[in-house]
Image 1 (cartoon, rainbow, N blue to C red):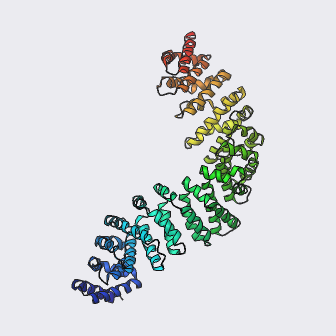
Image 2: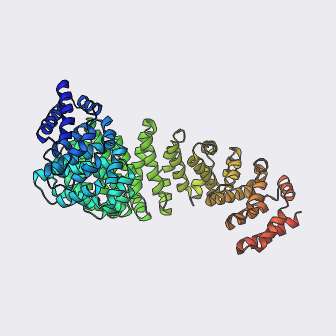
Image 3: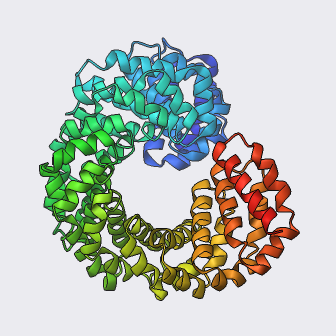
Length: 608
C-alpha cells in the first residue's frame, strides 16, 4: 500500500502540472483508499512529499475532481499535525470560495474540510475568519433550514459542526456568530428537524457552547428555545441524550427571563418526573440524573418571577413536592429541598407563610440527622434556609420557641467555614430585637469563646465578619450587664475595637454601639481591654478622618463621653487633644453631629 501511495503521489504531482484530469482522478482515488486504510500514515506521506501545496489549484469550482480533493483535505485534517500545514499550504481561501458552489457534494466535503481544519486549531480558525467562511456557512444554514429533505439534513449537520469547531471555547468567535444571528436559526432548526438525531445533537452542542456567553442569553430569550428544549427532553429515553439537553439548560437557566420561560414550558414537571424515576436507582446514570435535575430545579427558583410562580401562595404542587424532599433518605434530595426552601424564603410573605406551615420542624429534624452524619452541604443548605426564614420579625419568636437556636448550637464544634458562616448568620437573624434570646445566648460562655476564636479567622473573612457582628448583636439586643461581663471575660472587647475600624460602615456602627453599651454597663471591667486595644486612638482616628460617615462620628463622640469616667482612658483622651478635633465638628453640615460635638466639647472642657 505504501509503495502504491508513493507512486500515486508522484503521479499526482506530474499529472497536476499537466492538468491531466483522468490520471489526477485515479491518483486521488488511490490516496482516498490509503487514507481510509491508515489515515495517519497516509497523511504523513502527503506532508513529506509536499502534496498539500498542489491542492489549491485542484480546487477549481468547475472541476470534477473538486469533491474528492475537498474530501482528501477533510480526511488529512482529522490529524492534529496536519491542520497548520493545511493553512500554510493556502487551502483555506479556495475552500471558502467553494462554499458558493451549487453542488451538494462539493458543499458537503468543503464543510467537512473547513470544520476539521478548525478543530482545536487557532491557525485554522483565524484563516477561516479572515476569509469570511463563517458568514457564508451561517447564510447557508439559514436558507437551508426550512428544507427537511434527508440529504439536506446531512449538509446542515456538517455546516453546524463546522461552525461549532470554528467557535468552540473562543469567546470572540462565538460573539461573532451571535452577532450574525446564528442563534434564532439554530433554534428553528431544532424545531423543524427534531427527528434528525445527528443534526439535533449538533444543535445542542452548539447551544451548549454559545449559552456560556452572557451576550447570547438575550438572543436565546427572544426565541422559543425553552419550548423546543422541553419538547425534545420529553421525547428522550436515553440518559446520554437527556444529559446533553441538561448541559444546555443549565447555562440558559442562569437568565431570569429564560427561567420563567422554562417554567411556563413545563420543564419543572419533567424534572420532577426524572427525580421520581431516579431517586431509588443505584446506577451511576440515575445518581447523575437525579443530581442534575434537582440542581436545575433549585436554579429555576433563583429567579424572582419563576420562584413566585412555583410557590403559588404556598399552595403550589411543585412547592409541596419539593418540600417532601427534605425528609427523604437521599442526601442529594435533602440538599435540593433545603436549598429550594432557602430560595422560596426570599420575601417576607413567603417566609411568614412557610413558618406557619411547619417547615421549621422539618429543617430541624434534617439538621439533627446531620449532626452525626455530618454532610456539610446539607448542613449549609438547611442553615441557609433557617437564616432566611428568620428575617421577618414575626417569625423570630416562633422559631426560637421551636428550638432553632438549640439545634443550631449543636454545630458550634464544626470546623467547616461555610457551616460556621451560616450558623453565625442564623443566630444573628434570630436574636435581632429578641432581648431574652440575646441574653440567653450572650451569657453562654462556650458560644462567646467560639465567637472570639472565629474573630481571628483571618483566612475566612466571612466567618470573621459574622463572628464580630454576632458578638456586637448579643450586646446590642440584650443590653445586659451579664452579657457584657461574659464578653469581657471571653476576651471579646478587643475584637469589637478592631471592628470599629472596619471598611463597612454598618459594621463600624454596630461595633461603636456595642462598645458604648460596654462602657455604660461595666466600664471598670472593660477598662484594661479598652486601653490594651487602643480604643481612644481608634476614636481619634475616626473623628479626625474627613471620610468618616456622620453616623460614625456621632457614635464615636457618644463613646468618648462614656469612657471619660475611667482615669486611664480620660488621660489618653487629654493626651490626644480631642478638644481640637471635636470643636471643628461643631460646624459640621450634619445637625446631629454638630449638636453632639457641642455637648462633647462641654464634657471634655468640664473634665479637663
